[in-house]
Image (tube, rainbow, N blue to C red; front, side, top):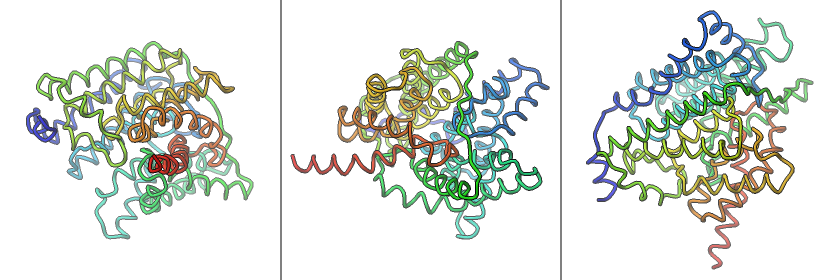
Length: 422
């Protein structure tokens, strides 16, 4: 049975059914928020999350508590799902990746205040270009990578709030306005081998803005605020979440894993939409499997489950509908792990673990050029990502996408050249 036959044969849920599946996890988080904390503490925690400096690495679990973090994450997903439904968009791999990336980063930098200026900027852009907002929604969802810029200008530069809050919003609107034309050109730099293209774009834009602010004497202090107290609960929840998706995919695929090995044959290079080429059943199965792979990667290396780790795992989970699978992602993780063993960084530190998780942005390299190439890409990625954050001052949440774009831009031409020379 070919992939078209499998897609036709799977159980059809329709657009609303697919949306309902996507809100299972945020709905559980929303309910748990009110079990884990009182309404008063939830509101106070959300307030602390909103006004906290958001440059990397800040853990909302430490800043606002687990209840407020769950609430922040679920609310952001609910609002984005509402927008998707309002625009009557068909659920595809890119939207799934965007939804769960937002959900994950709602634990370490995105909140119910700082993301919306980018949406306003995107809306102004489509009005200026006379196009429909649904055409750029995915790009705008990913552009919230620069959400910390809004918060840190609004609350971190020492101005009076009546000046700093509008100024932060204006910067966010500006970024949302220009991110679409910029991102379309940046894909050419890495030729689709960096899945976090907006992260690469945001890294360049954030570096420019941060450099300008530094030239006027304003600096963003990078930080490392991490929680430790929710490790066991989070790892249990993640295993449950991803097991649910494997079960859902299994049922949609007519109680079968048939065809999954075919999915592993794709390189993952942009654009690889598994919902389109293999169907929703196998896509959900792959998402669940990759979620478990990411979770056990952290467990095996004795890492602590905190906000940044959750962000990395949910990003992998989402992008497993849009290019990532075990065959092209695990080599990157191995490369990062080898690099940490051979270099000066602790293998189980949060920064190294998230480099292994987010470093799977380079999965298409392993998918196209093989396991060894993926290991090399992961090895180089750790060295670069540990040093490149200074350029943008931590205001680009997709720091690994920035690093991945540079690694891919250097490695891919070399690999293509040697391949042609064989």
